[in-house]
Length: 94
Image (cartoon, rainbow, N blue to C red):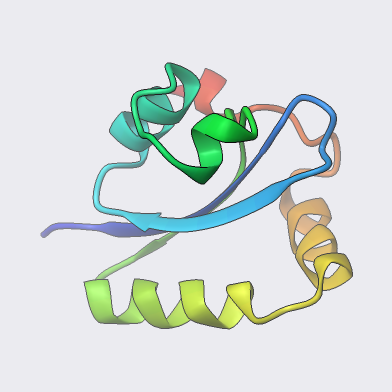
C-alpha cells in the first residue's frame, strides 16, 4: 500500500515554514536539501525536515496539507513542538 506524507520544512534560522505533500518523504527531503526543486524552498534555503505525518490516501494528505497551510504561524509551531520540540532535522533518521 502506497503512503502519502504531509511535511513541514524550515530554514537554518527557522524563519520560514514550508508545508508540502509527497508520496516519498525520503526523496522529497533529499530534493530540498540539495536544492533540486526550483522555487520557494530553493530561494529561501528551506532544507530542514521538522515535521511529517503519514496518510493512506493522497486525498487525505492533500486535505491535511491545505488545513495546515490555513493555520497561523503559531499554530504550526505548536504542531511541530508537539512531536519535535528540539526542531531537529528528522531526515537525519532516514
